[in-house]
Image (cartoon, rainbow, N blue to C red; front, side, top):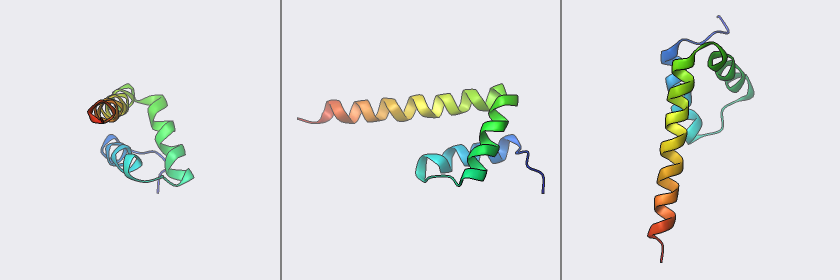
Length: 63
């Protein structure tokens, strides 16, 4: 099995990483892919932005 991930696998890991802690090997493979793939870096940045925006909206809704 190759250590390189394709973009479809990265997309799944990005999503999984928001739901659970990824094992060190998966995190390393993900980071390596981000080094070579600008598109996946941007997708990850968008996921992070949306996640933070949702957290902030939740904080504003509290009395």
